[in-house]
Image 1 (cartoon, rainbow, N blue to C red):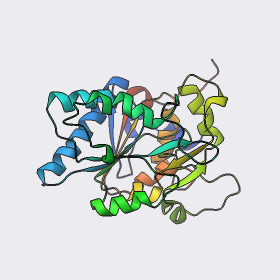
Image 2: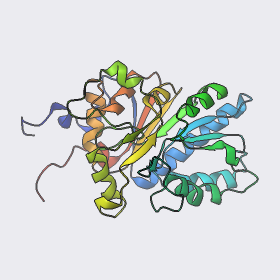
Image 3: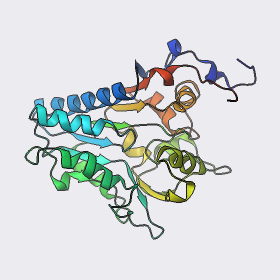
Length: 282
C-alpha cells in the first residue's frame, strides 16, 4: 500500500484491535450483524432481570435491521420488556429546535414505532414512558433518568464516517477541545457536520436537501459512563473509520476512539468491514 496512506489504513483484518482492550468480533454480513446485535440486547436485559432489576439501554437507529429481529425474538420467547427503559441516542430537529414530526420519513421516533414497538405483543412491549428520546428542551432529563435508573447497562450503536457516536460530532476545524473536555460533553443540541449530512443522504437514498441540519444527541458523557459498549459496523465505507477508531490515539477528532478507554467495549464488524479498504478509482 502506498507509503502516503495513514498507517491505520494498513492494519490487516487479523490485527484489528490488537494493542487495545476493545474486543473484536467479525461476522459475515448485515444479516449476521443484526442477529448478533439483537442477541446481545436480549442477553443484557436477561442478565438484569436475573439480578432482580430492569435494564436500561442506550440504543441507535443505525444500524437498523436488528429491531425487527429483536421484536420477533421477544414475541417468540415471551419476554417481558414492559419495564425495560430504552433511550434512543438521538433525533433530528427542525430549524426551531423541535423534534422533526414522527411522520417525517427520517424521524427516528417514527422508525422505532413502525419497526420495533408496533411489532411487539403489547403485553410484552416497553411501556410508552420507557421509550425515551433526548428532549431538545430538557437536555438534563437523560442524565436525571440515568441516575434514577442506577446507570446504563449497555450502550449500543454504530460509528459514523467521521468517527461519531450517536450525533457526537468531532470538533469543527479551528475549534479547540481536549480529549478530556470532549469526553465530558453531555446531551445537547448541535449542528450536524458536513460529513454526516453527506453520508446520511447517501444511506437514505435521497439528496443533501432531505437531511435536517440540526439534531439532539445523548452526550459522550452518558455513553462513556455505560457499563458496556457494544458497537456494530455493517457499511462498506466503515472499513477505514474502524481502523482509525482502533489504531489511532484517542482524540476528540474521532469520537469512537474513546472506546479504547472503556472497561468493557466490544466492536462487531462485517467481514467486508474488517477487510482492508479497497482504495482506488473505479
